[in-house]
Image (cartoon, rainbow, N blue to C red; front, side):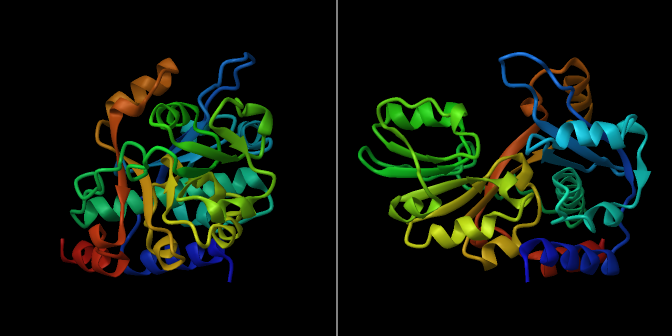
Length: 283
């Protein structure tokens, strides 16, 4: 069974145990025709203030989403209706489904009294341990600022990137010919946007043998149970704690990271969906 199918099943399970708040609008970034990288994340908002970020720049997802939701803030629907499109061949719908999944995940954690940022590991800012000089870090998706920090430490970086023209090839940075090269890395950092196109499982298959596998990025803000079951060592996301600051930043089209706290969860710091549901039902 595909991972996206299991996500849909898990969302239905959650909805059968607790009442989920309705979707109360979307935010879609505006397309910017310039060389600088634009804001590439959309957001699903729920009635209780829970937020689910999702990556919008796979293929032509963003213009498709704008075409279907010309007034995104006005969207009112049930989150399950969006999550049922998870794994669709339509990347725009699958991306939006991931945002809805992240939103109900944040709702459940909040309702259960579990703060992922409070439980986070010390690697929350990067998603990685402390690689030593000479070690090799595999990177699925190009994270330029993180690459620069790794190079400063003398760490070698191997990049798997769908758009190789984005990768700045400098000393210490190599572009992988195939994902199979990840098996020779000391650890792998993988963008959570691989959840949108069902490519994560293939990446995991090629990464067997690496020392540690971390999923990172705002799109990874959902419950990590299914990922831990597949051997992912840590899962990162963001917990938004200042909704007003987030809305203000989005309206001004500026950086929104200050409105929340990044986190990186490991199996030993996460109680599991069953325990979260038990706690949520008691409240």
